[in-house]
Image (cartoon, rainbow, N blue to C red; front, side, top):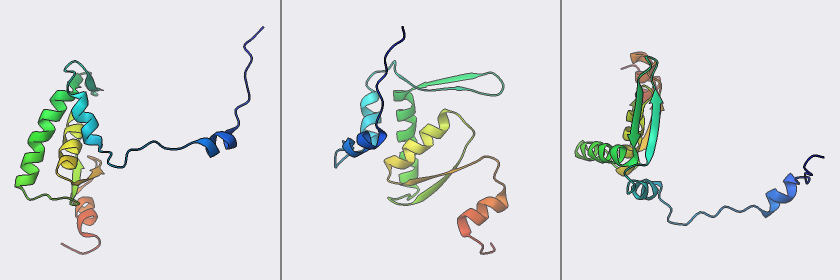
Length: 128
């Protein structure tokens, strides 16, 4: 008749599960390796106007490293938070990878934030 299925014992599987994460894992290293295949796409974005944007890993990486250089020249350092306000698309990946490359922390924000929201987010409830 139909296929036989075996019961899945969640608790048993949970007990046996372990993460296999190298101690010196760096996500940027993976992205750097993926750039070697110049045909491998990282992102495909369809915008509201119907435009389709495609970007390969190597393209995003090159632009991210350029941005990383700008950030480093602007004195962004390890642990600094960088607010990213961009619409959906490839630029979000470029910005994130560029920020990570200099050790920064990406703070994602929606493009719907207004000036007062951004000022509050950056300065807290202190008037500016």
